Amino acid sequence: MSRLTARAGAALVLACAGVVTAASASASRASTAATDSFTLSAQPIYAQAEAAPAPPRKPLMAALDKMGAAKTLDDWNINIGGLVEAGWTYNFDDPAGGINVGRVFDFEDQDPTLDQLMVFVERTVDPSKGKFDVGGRMEWMWGGDARVIHSNGLFDHYGLADGPDEQFDLTQLYVDVGIPVGNGLTVRAGKFTTLLGYELINPSGNALYSHSYLFGFAIPFTNTGVLGIYPITDKVTVTAGITRGWEQSLEDNNDSIDFMGQVKWVASDKVTLYFNGITGPEQTDNDSNYRTVLDGIATIAVSDELSLAVNGDFGWEADAAADGGSALWYGVAGYAGYKISDYFTLNGRVEWFNDDDGARGLGTNVYEATFGVAIRPMGADPIGQNLVIRPEVRYDYSDDDIFDGATQNDQWTFGVDALFTF
Image (cartoon, rainbow, N blue to C red; front, side, top):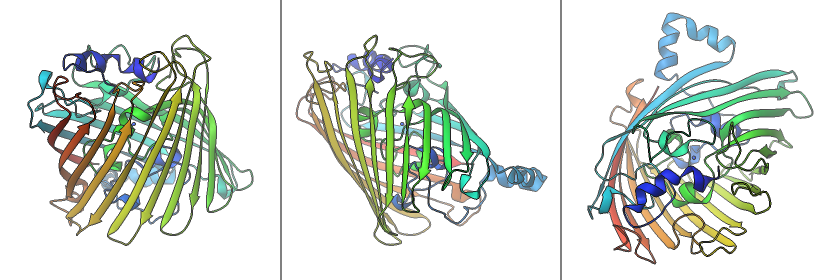
């Protein structure tokens, strides 16, 4: 089941608004996304992460500390945690069908939503220590977001077209094997969030409540397969492997494999670059029409307060355009975050995405600008600092009338979520 197939339910819902649309990065990105970061310099991205000071205990592990259990878990290098997120979006146009066109998770107008209740258990490995090691991660989600990210053969009997508003999804389940070869090789096998893209399914790794078009339309959410992660030097890490395809897990829509990889380059103590790619056949019962996406990310820590990032995607696929021909899609998103204090961080995003060929469900050129504030009302409290409230204002513009039942070429929305990590 390709990503477009996985979003067939979303297409049915959005059809009532007069437009068909489609409804989240790497080894440490997948496992460190639960670290509650809202400044862009701390954005968790795949490949092996640089050494960083251990974050303070989250509430669940802190509670286990008091019972003495966490010390045993620490001995085994096991971490348990999770998050809960609820949000609400208001569209100033009162759109037809109550649908915010072009959105991923926040597509329902004026509908308070329990976006995610997520729990995880993980054990990280470090093969650079010169011994074999085994770890992994299991991550479960329950909530409205799960409707959008089901993979083929795993909870995919539900979706947007049927089933309850809150659903279960096994977002990640993989095993890591650390092999003491050279600088240390990690082999990952199972289901994991994709290498591509700057934004994450896990909201604690994003600065804003709403997601970019690149996140929702240009790249996959999850992959199932085998990856090898190897640090060539302390500055360059290479990840490569094969997967069953976009949103494929226990079943495969065409029994073909994808090739996926990443090169991470720590260019300086302030600049880190990521070059990602994926290619393979994604269309149902077709193993010859390849879909390929090249993805680039740059993060820049300008100062302790100001962080910048940019994400660009370029994709193409044979026989995938709305008119039956070959299709291209491409775009770029820029991010900025400024930390005022432990209580307030300003965040912004501007973006352009082109899907003129219609392969990704939009069929036009779109732009968006979003401004938000991450508010920690109890930023100095050991427990309360894990709560963040993120109001935002967003403006979307399209070359064609795709919003409000295909009657307008723009839309204004206000959104807010409350996120607590534990």
